[in-house]
Image (tube, rainbow over the protein chains, first blue to last red):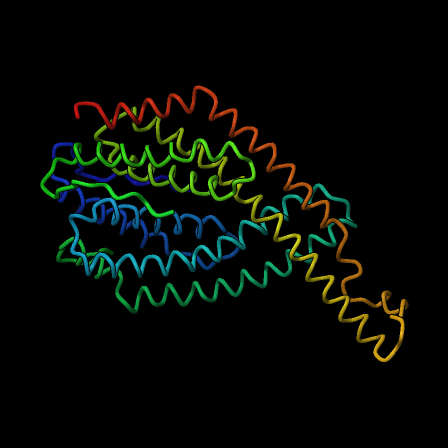
Amino acid sequence: VAKARDIPGLDPAMSFAAAAALAVETRSRELLDHADGVLDVSDIERVHDMRVATRRLRAVIEIFSSCLPKRERRAALREVKTLADALGERRDADVAIAALEGLAKSLTTEDRMGVKSLVDSLRARQQEANQDLAGALAAVEEDRLADRLAGLIGAGEPVQ
Amino acid sequence: VRARKVKGLRPDAQLIDAARRILAVRLGEVESFAAAVTDPADERALHDMRIAFKRLRYVLEVTRPCFGDAANEAIASARRFQDILGEIHDCDVMVPMVEDHIQRLRMEDLASVRAASDGNVEPDAAALRTAPNRRRYRGLETTATYFRARRELLYRRLMRELGGGRWSGFREGVDTMAGAGA
């Protein structure tokens, strides 16, 4: 899993509100940067990294909630959670498939039959989850989540 | 489980003071599950403790500049506990998933045999030869057994870690960060 990015400019003596702006900006950028290639089911770490990035962003929104405007904060949390749920559905299927395929290598050819039948049903679930994820990613674009996050921290420019 | 509210976080407070307050609450959250997870069957407590570790780790990742190496050590320990708890959770998901799959195969085969025996007093035993899933049961029970065994071993490892120096070192480390200078 990708390591959390350091937050540039953070200083123990700065105000909690100033730290909030820096933390939300860094974590927002982290999330949006992880969108590339996330629908590629041959590289399951991308979904994992983006999912963790949603958690880190939600965490900072919650940590610094007293510094962020309530209405905008709730709206941003709701949108990020919707994306996180879609990533989670894909991730659940990815993890189960990887675990079963790893185990299958140690089984006899006959015993692999049953595991394959379960993996096949999980592959169908993975495809379905991937379609939902594609929709969630499109919604992030359409709803201009980057702008909303920028608005949350009072920055003039959207987080790219 | 919902995160406990941290009171008194003023926007004009210094980051380090706010960070200490948050850490104290998040550590209390993690510790609150320590007794419940001694019951290996308490899946809920194990899951909640994992989430609590995660919340604490995310706070440390953001406030790391306030605490230096102590934060890095606590992040590594939290990560280790979280990983073991996560793997236990994966087993708790896998076992019922495999069992549900077996049940689904059975139901499909039952429907097939029932359809082939329609109108008969006795089911048609020959219909078993064409049951759609007759070859798909192999290895599934073994797979469920594997994940049960894996869960047991992971749980033992967790108990060893919670009873050892890593847990006490983690608590002391976070407690010191939360309390230092407060």
